[in-house]
Length: 351
Ligand code: PMV
Image (cartoon, rainbow, N blue to C red; front, top):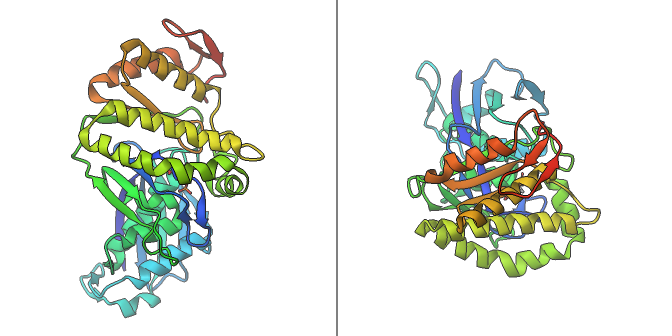
C-alpha cells in the first residue's frame, strides 16, 4: 500500500481563457494569465491510497462518489501512470516499480475548502491537486518542462495554471497534439507579497451553464469572442505581465477589470446569452469604481469568472479599507444597499 496527500490552491485569471480550440485536447483559442492564491482559503486537498487489494479505481469529491470513468479523469490517470518512474516505495519501504502499478488500484478522496462549481475555479484547484498527488504517488517525472501542467490542462483548462504559485501564463500553444499548451511561471509567489485577494461569495450554488458548454456556445455564436482572441488578448497579456513584474497596481488593476468585463460581454454576446453575474455582482463593480474614483486612483480591482462571485485584488495597505466598505454595503442578512458616497442601489440579499 502507498498513500499520499497534497493540497493545491486555486488560481484566478486576470486575462481570461474562454473558448476551446480543440475540445478533445482541451486547448484554448487564446493564452491567459492568472494569480495563484495562497493555501489559506481556496484550495483542494486530495489523498490517494493505492493498494493491490482494491478491486477498482474510485474517486470521491466532497464526500460524494464521482464517476471514475469520466473522460477527463481517465486522461489524467492514464497520462500520469505513463509518467511513473521506478522510484516510488510502499508503506513498508519496499519499491513499487513502474511495471508494478497495473496491479494497484487507487482510491482518491478530494475535498474543496470552498464552493464547488460556483465560478471560483474549483476545477482548477481540483485537477491540479489530482495531478500533484499522482506525481507524488507515482514518483512521476516530466519528459519536458511543463508537461505536468499539460496533463492538468486535459482535466480542466485553468488547472494547468495552479501547479505553480505567483503569476502564471497558460500558453495556448501551436502543436497539433496540444503538448505545448502548458503553463509558464511569469513571477513566483514571493514577487508581490503586498498583493491580496478578497473573495466575495455572492452565491455558492453551482452555476447553470458549465464553462465547457458556455465556451462552446460562445465560440459558435459570439463575434466578439473571435475579435477578442485575435486583437485584444496578446496586447493585454504583454501589458499586464509587465505591470505585475513592476508591481504597478494601477495598470494591473485596470487591465484586470477590463478583461473581466470583456469576458462577460462575450457571454452576453453569446446566443442565447449567458449571464454569470447577478445584481450583487454589478453592485460590487459599481462600488469598486466609486471607491477608486473617490481616492483618485485604481486601488481595488474586481474580476469575475463563470459565476456571480467576485474576487477583488488590492494591495495590503488598502485591504482593511476595502473590506470595511464591503462589510458596510453587503450586510449578510439585509437586502443589499449601497450607501454613503455611493449612489443608492438595492438588490437581493447574498445567499
Ligand atoms: O478551466 P475551466 O474549463 O473551468 O474554464 C475556466 C474559465 C474561466 O474561469 C472563466 C477563465 C479562466 O481563465 O480561468
